[in-house]
Length: 488
Ligand code: BG6
Image (cartoon, rainbow, N blue to C red; front, side):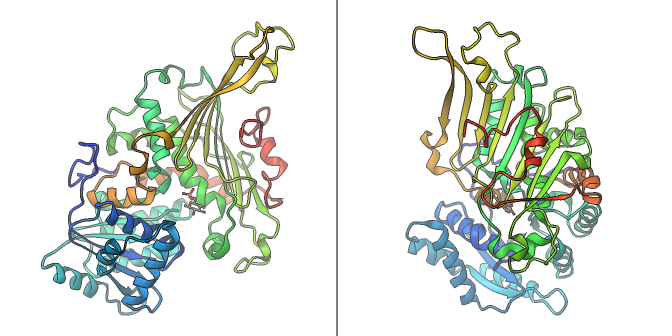
């Protein structure tokens, strides 16, 4: 379990602290995630004044690039992501800190020399942050290389998800990590936890007294965690073929969201306390059986470049999960995610039980309304809404659906918020584990997935642009998916 001691207590004030001086080694520096999120994120931290006073970023990958190639690639990533002209002064400050070194775990590697050169330029030893933005199979060799090069002391390591591909590989990776690093040096990232709107689940639940009395099986009928995406896979098929929707999204982001929704109130809003409560939820999760999962692939996936002809990789996964504890026994959690679906949203919907009796006359409209629900739209910025029944204006006693909505875009400090990756890179630099996952937590999630991984349900098909095959609706039984239903 994470028992980190942050360099500074980042929760003390409302403003985030400036991290201590660092050399950051970014493995996978030319990959898709680095292009979309990590380069723009690091640059934006510089603009926001949240990079250390002294830092160097060493980009690394298997390709042969020069320092200038890396700068050009990072610049393009920043331009593509910003949507506004790049601040040239900030870019110049940032760009001169970048350098490139090749990672070749099968031959001589110059990682140690690159880190030493950065430290020599700074005139002293810096804190080190190794960021592994690489697929699961590449992690072990890089961790070994960091150990061999003597770069583990005075460092922290961030590992992208998915962490392993099943229980055995996650255990193996954890064991290897622990040969090179102490657990409190390890940061397993799940970027959903860095999303402002996701942290709002914690704020809504634990900063208010009114939800706790109804946040249980007595009042909640079921929970939906729904993350359909309109995105396809474009250049990511090589990664995705070996991963699929379940490993890419369910065992990671969706289960972490479930942890935030289902956890008991922690005794403090700190890493150790949150992790204890989240991991208790994971412990209480029932092992998924084959009929708890629907796997499907969109038509045309097999024709995409990089996909094997008879690929059985699912591009959509929907699951029914049970949390067998006193708070949640008998309350199903329905999870759904997929590529090329009808809409791109991230929604957590808490569906409440109906009123115990219906005193409104037949025909008043009560029967046709959806149950009360609280919806967290985890978009950026997020929206919170509460759906309920209200009297329709007019002389009769008709009832209609109404919503109370709060959009975080209207919050005064909304523009100061950091993007998820920015937030988490910053947290790793200051040693704050609050929004990261742990070895036991991740292993437990692979444990509950073991049966459906070894004996997966049949692969269904769905047309691109749809809500998935009919089995996805059958999974949720008498209820219906909030998104594909009336209140969208
Ligand atoms: C990533 C997955 O972790 O999360 C992607 O690998 C997915 O497949 C992405 O598209 C979704 O994240 P976000 O922040 O864009 O909702």
